[in-house]
Image 1 (cartoon, helix red, strand yellow):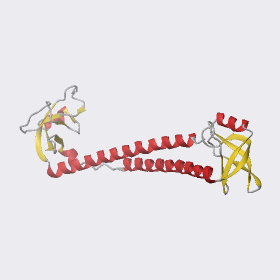
Image 2 (cartoon, helix red, strand yellow; image 1 turned 90 degrees about the vertical axis):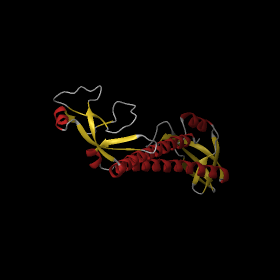
Image 3 (cartoon, one colour; image 1 turned 120 degrees about the vertical axis):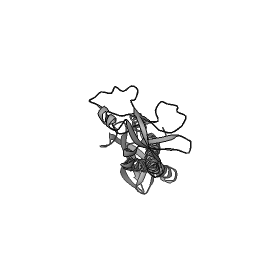
Length: 234
């Protein structure tokens, strides 16, 4: 009977978790980059590095390219380059610079080399964390949807356990104007406090369940105040 709401809880809970994790990942990544650039600019060592062509790149006289560079410091090098430029340069520009570029470098707590072009670091604009904020908003809205479905289920359980009992009769079943056509609303009549009334269920019944309600002839209804639910197990 509450299969649709259960599915809603599962779906929105997944959305909540995924968007929250993504939001945290983006925030942590952006903040790490911002902190790294600030630290590099204030504490990094500025040196003039030797530029060289990157393997796999065909340098022509017309194009503008990234260039690799090697720092003028003694260190064990795992790769033939210590970094590559963020900015692109033509061959003529590189030659005019003496095939050298100013870069900042430092080593992190794990001894890993961090190096970037001086021009990039000096002109770096801290990344905004609006993407992570948006993801957290989506996560919050999805979690509200989870609470909504949980609340509806809890309320239904309370009514079915503690509500007054009556006998209901099937009137008709129809799709909601909004939502999936897989689920139906059921209109039914029952006696509430000595008066016959017509009530409509939420759109939570699939076709098989509608047929079982219709074929049963009559069924139990439980109500508290103006709220009622079909007390039928499927």
